[in-house]
Length: 212
Image (cartoon, rainbow, N blue to C red; front, side, top):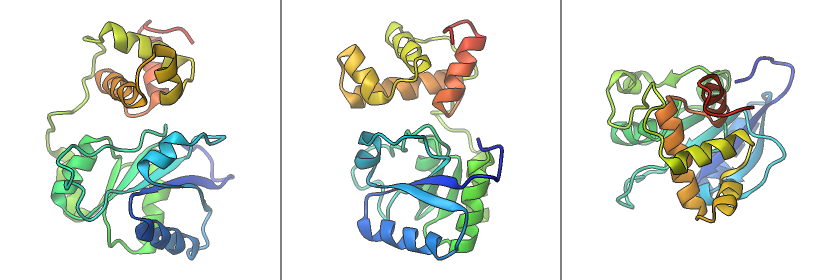
């Protein structure tokens, strides 16, 4: 979470549709704000890149038909809070379950989008009024408030998170696929009741699970 307005807000833009990415980039740049797009691409592209610093916020366009693949939505795991742009309430539920901190409709105007990104970058939650009811809806994947139930593999992953390793580095260290590493990281976050990797490490340290 950002603590100061002195530096630009670093944004990573994630959208599978290149036209949507371009439109969002132009809309934000035309606002002449303190927000800087430091990375942009598909989910696979941004997660495989190695930026010098983590973004302050992630703008995630889930697309017009996010459930078309028949699987669960997979939010960007970039160590920053995520603001999701969704086409409807069903997609909003999926994005929220995947870990999004805020939800807006895809046709949101540039000015409120910029304001929402600033708020999410500072650790706040932002919901379009028509999607606000989702915030209070119990979800099957809601994170646990206790760390009980960590598997041996998840404890290994937690230890590597404490070392500051990326999903790719964790996969190489444990000789597993990057997709599997991400699955374990998400499971650790859920069981620790947090949304960010840094929060997981801090909570785990307080509980005596890791040493930092």
